[in-house]
Length: 214
Length: 231
Image (tube, chains in turn green, yellow):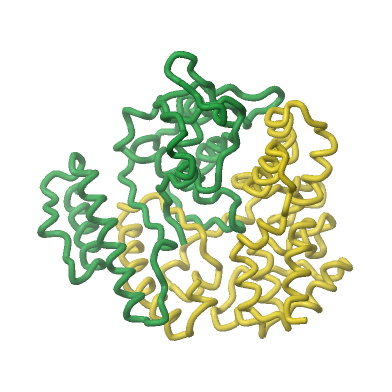
């Protein structure tokens, strides 16, 4: 079960030889396509090893931001679906597809699009994509909490599994408070986070947020 | 994976945490209007069934507007092939890709407006990388990498031969259950089993819509390995 996946393991195996991702690359739609684009290679800043000087395809697990920041990459622009989703001001959706259909990448894209923390980077990330040209009113407007429960180790012991789950939720909440400090004044980690119960911590944060916005 | 791999006790314990605490808190957040957009993926409908606060979550995977949200259409794959394999014969490659990785239909289309079938993107990329690198294309690598084969083994191979024979002969009615209890994922209920296979991409809506079929040759091979493994 994923609410978001944020790793960059897709290019790790070639970390030593991979060029640095740029904040912004020019994306060019390929002939006769409204969705398939290719990232450019900057002749000045990119010193490309031979393996990166040719057209490339996203590796398994490539993150959403990788798809617009590595050179010579061919990828699909699925951002037009955000426009469709944002017809509703509020939604609770469950989307099912088999493995390796790109569910996690899509979720990373949604997360990046809505997250207030990345407002300044919005043009860099989405500027050349469909939604960058047709942004909705919800772009960079939300605090985003992302849980990837597939990271939790399920053991044969129920107690151990519970412990892993609580630990994971605690880590996510801690990161959330740290990263969103600027939007959550007076949210004191020490008071909100309860190491004995991650779910109490989640409740504390939600209650504090209600008090903040009302 | 708790659903398939371990005791029902572990599964109950995990779902209980989600049901009583995690999703209950999120549900409160939704009712208070502080959680406005909520996206859940990577679960089976059986999980939703066991977690009552998730009852309000709407499944949109079978909404035609979102058909292409994940996966590639034929025209998209053709564009990728032309650009990635600049010197190779596009028609031959496309023919092979259609046979191996196309054919997924997750939505029963209106008769007047059939939806294009989809390709699995990572299978397409792996195929093209092999071609570009001069390596043999081995769909079996993909099959073995998919945890689907593990899940099929857990469901129990005895449930499969009849289902797959029906699917191969276009006689498996296109009944997909979006609600089923976790206790029935063990192969005891054929309708639940065929729904599970649908969600794992092993079965799909056939072109005619009236039946479920096996989407492509890669999935046919997965089926063959699973059915033949006990022999």
